[in-house]
Length: 204
Ligand code: GRF
Image (tube, rainbow, N blue to C red):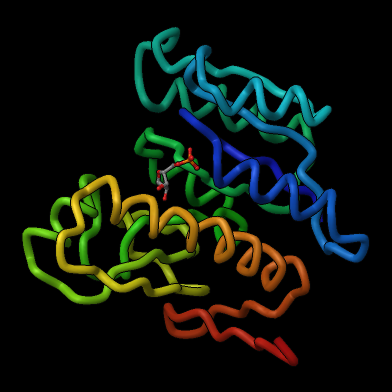
């Protein structure tokens, strides 16, 4: 499975995917390229050091979302991927773009969906007083943070947690979860029926 990862920032989830693919001899996916919409993204440096092809499609260079998405789509397709992974990619994608990758575009969200869609998930979880928080890998559909859920991981919210402490606990879970979800997808174990992902976890 050829994978293109889309990033905007730090790239720790991207790094987790790259590292897993490099470390596990039987890993069923390879990261063929990393594309950023931000020229200065730290993720690009990490990818380059790992010997992975990188590209920048700067949203600021385009007059509309549709034009940006068309350029992004073209850049992605030049690497002929089977799957596109969003990893801290901070642009909203147009319906047309998403349609073009239906079933082959996945995202990691730092909350237990359908709770806390959107931004600032950790602050909102703390404000709500939830005792469990976590992360979700899902298939991307037109409605934001609402596509079929492939896998989730929960972490406790502890007394005295601030946003940074909670974010760090979730992030550690994200890195493991994204690797697991990518593996499941790449092994053909994810099937969407009635808007839900049926996941054959096999012997995992
Ligand atoms: C992660 O928490 C991810 O879930 C969210 O943005 C953050 C990106 O972090 N969408 P990184 O760039 O992967 O380090």
